[in-house]
Length: 284
Length: 284
Image (tube, rainbow over all chains, first blue to last red):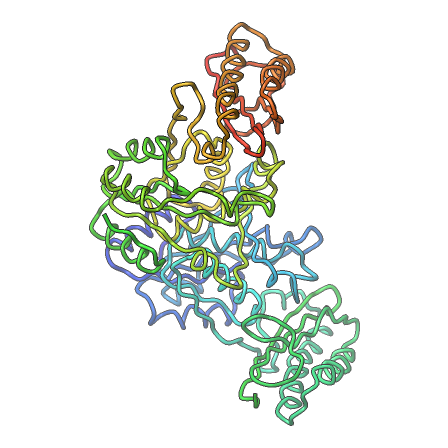
């Protein structure tokens, strides 16, 4: 396994892979790897000949009052996990190389970036789109895979890829959960023991929403009301949003039918957690 | 010579060129080709094995009250000129394919896009950066060449290429002028006979600026004043801007020394013309 820190070295290496006819798959991450990331790597295994994992805590996707400084990092552990998974290359650039002085260029995916997580995190998806475009240009992958926990991120990236004509196939992997249902996230580390105990309520509220949809309830407001009641039982919690939207366009669902994405963000103390579920098979 | 209108066809063709080891050079244009464009094609001739000329009047770089609808177009003539120049491929996509319904993604090069032409044409360089990124992803050129008449455009594109890690070498070609000094432009066609007669005053004012710099005048305001007096002699004219800036950063020059870009935009009637000169060899 090769660890590449320099952008030109990565570009040269990718060119060598391409020239020798190898398919390059990319797993973009911010490190502090967990089972969710590992499942992305495993799901990519049969899709390509070379797997590149990028590890970069991208400053441009954090707001000024967010957790950039304290975001968990453990490169040695990440490296060990990638080695065990037989990853071919870790791309591990510095912030200084990714965003040199006088950096000025940003990619905005309009509409999709302003709802849900984008409402409480202005600039977040601009940072995501920008760094993903940079990684695509540096690593030049044939395929890139993203986790469905960040569902809105996937929708934003697909839109960017289509709009800017990137020739990268975007795959996704289902959310990986702890045994009690909590979606895996590097940010779970922030939770106190008391918060951790209540954290599975997020997923329970999503399952409740699914049950209600399947029972034939068609008014999204009823479902939001029920989820709100459940989530408000978590001490020191604050709901950022609960959204029922179309999974492809993120437009609000007016009547529960067809496919529905139920997504939420909730603060437990100062930690903001997100989760979602896609409800399929509803009558149109 | 091949004319390609479909994006996937162009992408496949570029892959074939790359796979057979050919260097691809791109001349992005909005068509209605003149000697300026032809000099770009000729200057690229020895730099690459395949020359692609894109012809696309890019709607996103025109403001709502600008000349998108009446921008001159003559594809048959353009095709003939490219054929005579032995261009390999014309990429000639439709607006509908380049910007399909629900198009949402835009690239902003901050700072550089807001001065000079960007001040009177808000959104212009956002449209330029966006379409150039799309062309780069579709045509995947090793080299692209731009005219120095649109000097600010070159600076914006270089910044985008560096920031987003595009592996495209950016070349430029000097301004090509009519015998009386008027910089070649597709928009010169808009000029009435009377306007055309006065149009060379733009370049004369730039030459006057150059002379003053070389005479040792160090106060930019003096030069702007002299240029303003000259330009105001053109009937029905209005100066949009006269800027003395550093060529790499477009920051205003406070004292004339080192390299200076003198750039201007002037309305002759309803036609907006731009021109510029780089003054080198001044004492530091």
